[in-house]
Length: 199
Image (cartoon, rainbow, N blue to C red; front, side):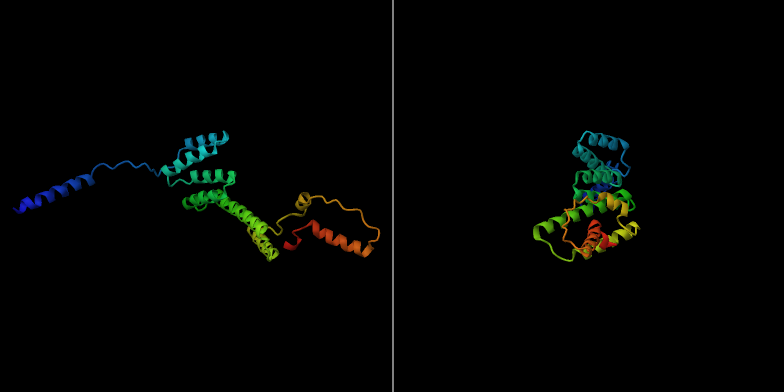
């Protein structure tokens, strides 16, 4: 009688043990790197101005091969070139999770972040007449950039002359005294170099 009660339990345990030791089901995800074929096809799609098709191909490749950083870097580049900086940053962060030393991904994050911040600050300034100590913030940012780049000056003297627009001077009034003219040349030299206060 005891055997009749335990028999279904024994059969169930044996059946479950048999299922557990069966052949493993092949996973659709692979840890192998993505083949070069995907990147070749994506490059062809980009050349044909089909960025969304290339992005979809790379997204599928990243889902199939979750440990490979290359699809994420390429997707970040596509979004960066399209000006979709939020997605570019997200994709670059995905690449950095897979390889924290990837230089391209770090560059995309940095430049995209600066562009988003610049646009947001410009929009805020334009809409709200933002007032504040912008000069000190600009000086702090310039100092940070100089330190990061290892440069004493952000803009070289020759570069500033090339990028400074030419100003057309109005005809001088004959009533201007020489001392005023000297002070005008000093202020105009400061006008030519808007970054002189940042040095």
